Image (cartoon, rainbow, N blue to C red; front, side, top):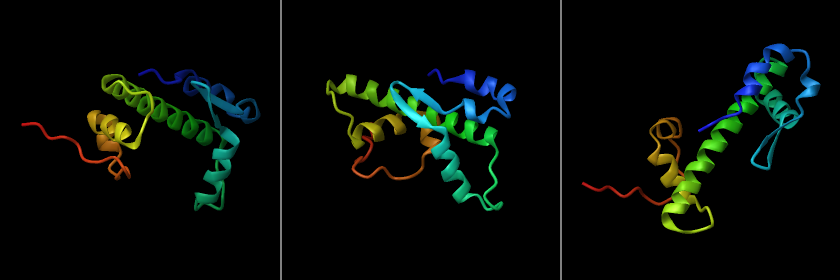
Length: 118
């Protein structure tokens, strides 16, 4: 699983250049940095102060997690020979990966149960 580590490496050189990082693109999907910045400001208890580095890190982490989950769900779809990703496929993908299983403890609605084979 490859994430966009170039953004993480370049953050130190672009500390003051928040305007240059507008969007992070993952397989055609766009992660808008400004929108995530706005959402973080509404949820931070420190008087709405969020640095540009925090936003870029958060956006790149979301991009990495989204990429990993979608790739695992795509592999599940290939195994089941279907074309559409459903909540069941997301459930199988997340519970099949050890790291994501420990990270995501919530229930995926419509995901069903994991088959337990002895």
